[in-house]
Image 1: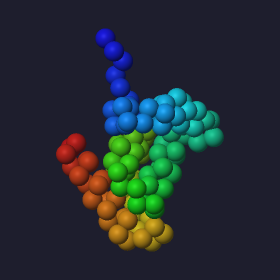
Image 2: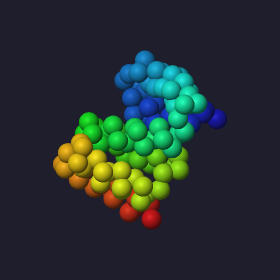
Image 3: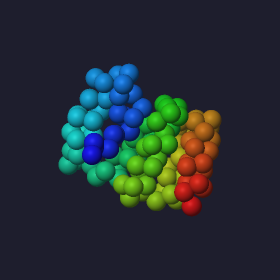
Image 4: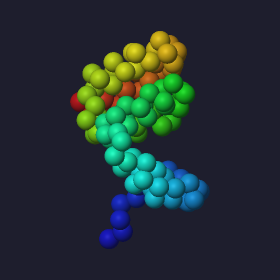
Length: 107
């Protein structure tokens, strides 16, 4: 049975195998596993960066990862609310709508 494909392999594996390899072989095993921050904290930083930079395509996957890494939904919503004043209202509103869609369907 073939190994389950990673999210990067599923979305870009046939189109950009080099980028997928960097994601799967370096980003997650090397950067996400560094001891300086917990995965929970790395998720919070990553979601904050995605909200601030308005990277909507990546938000959903990293919001799910943040919950899996120990952030609560209330903490995620509070972080997005906090970011409204630093990253901009439209970015926060979009991020909150993304979170709502993700987690209302999961409930």
